[in-house]
Image 1 (cartoon, rainbow, N blue to C red):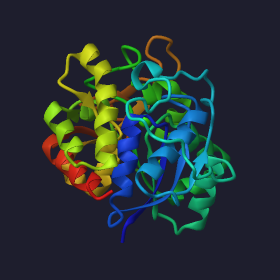
Image 2 (spheres, rainbow, N blue to C red; image 1 turned 120 degrees about the vertical axis):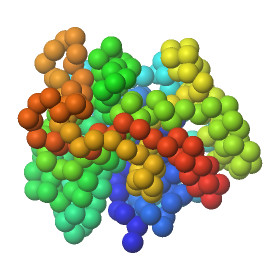
Image 3 (cartoon, rainbow, N blue to C red; image 1 turned 180 degrees about the vertical axis):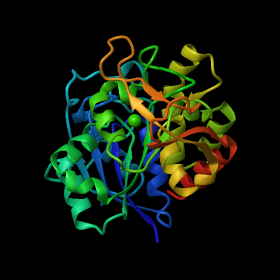
Image 4 (tube, protein in one colour; image 1 turned 180 degrees about the horizontal axis):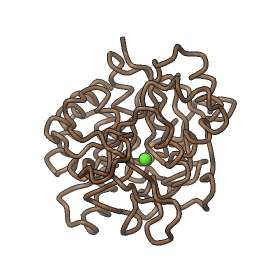
Length: 312
Ligand SMILES: [Ca+2]
């Protein structure tokens, strides 16, 4: 039985690859719908980009909804400096023909969790947690029905990428992150500590390109664009593929290892707002609330990605 998921996303080149991996893996993953959120770029673009990716995958029947256009309490911060003006800079992809679904993404999350049997729907947030937390605030009855949340966000050893202390997704909407991490839902976190080990080296990107398909070409060109920023910033040998760690985990959890620990979100400090305060060393007696990943089998991860993208 494939696992039923809702992908909550702000595409984003790495979101795009995460979505492609999910749509290429119907044996393991059933995508009930995709909800767009403001993050890397404004909502109008993330809602459009999500549909561009579904059409690239040859899956125009996937339901895509627009969700929240701004964080719960804070002014929206975007990341065009990383992802380009459209969020999907790199390949030339046609505007989508498929329509956005009527209705709000938050309502889709609520209605789906109410309609499906308890414990059978996993939420996969790949951007700021605004849609998830808004759904939990508006409909607390759905919280206990969530099977698991598998998200990309936060950092401990790698600390911050948008501020010295905070990772982008959590920083953009720390209030939403706090609600999510305190919800009691089992959470799996893919922090920068993991994603910065999922680097698209030239050889790995050549493998995408060598698929010789529109998907392989588009992914290689997205990564070409995306990596300039990280090479300059970190001096690394390629771009980290953050978000696909989430969908890869649903297919091959054994690629990842981490610790079940307490993670709290800093929401008050101007200096460290959005920091994921992860008790990796167990120095508090705060109850564990998240499986916080620390390592990845990067070769296995890229082998999986290349094999699955070849199917589209
Ligand atoms: Ca993202």
